[in-house]
Length: 195
Image (cartoon, rainbow, N blue to C red; front, side, top):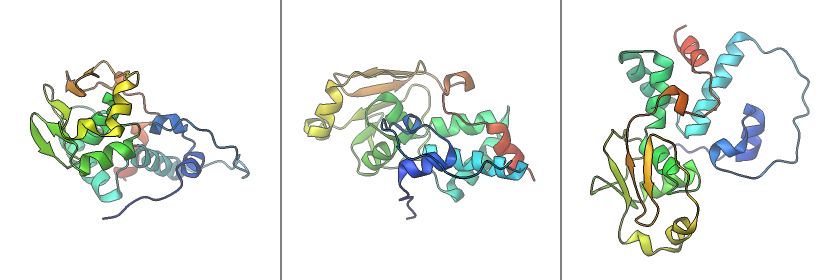
């Protein structure tokens, strides 16, 4: 399985993303020391795609498949793409506050620490639907990791609800574009793939 092992802060600097969008709250002391050249239209589009892939932790093939599915749905393709990325199981676990970063959420899902509607799941790319309940497994709740998460103050978006004591969350509805706070200009990704 392909993995992205790039240093996170270095990648954030090159893609001009604030690390807090990944759940990381430390700053890089280094400044990019490159000359500012005007980026071509293709360069802007490619960088936007790389940003989306990096923020959501998705590889190229999976991202392309998600884009193709979004294009077949009714509505704006770019908005559909972001909604599909946002409603992946690993991202929902991160948004519920049941993991500190998206990378950690992905790892915990793969290791089978969560249940979806009472069934054990280990696929981070699973699309959640309104009404789905995500819960930390009973056996996992006693681990130090989840005890630490239980004590934290959890703030989740309006399309989700969370019960920090039970370590479970519910998907109230799918997010709208206004509720997605990631700094991605989705129209550039659509332009890139429509060439």
